[in-house]
Image 1 (cartoon, rainbow, N blue to C red):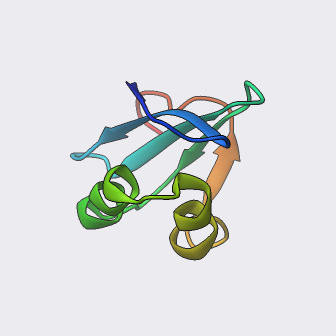
Image 2 (cartoon, rainbow, N blue to C red):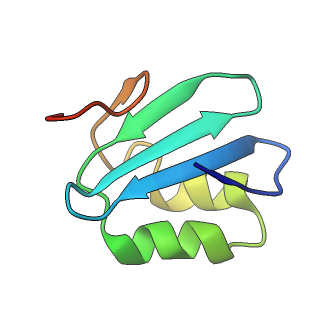
Length: 73
């Protein structure tokens, strides 16, 4: 997981081979987003506002589940 500066997002992780994005929010909740392209992850890392980027390009755009990304999932 990579710590990021954000009032909403605490840290992010990405598995490029499986295209899984794991996001830990400052609330402590963790979500796993599936089928996320590498350029979307890179955009998140470079975004001035991580929360705004999440809402515009990730949330409700990709399948997700609450909890960490697991092997084989």
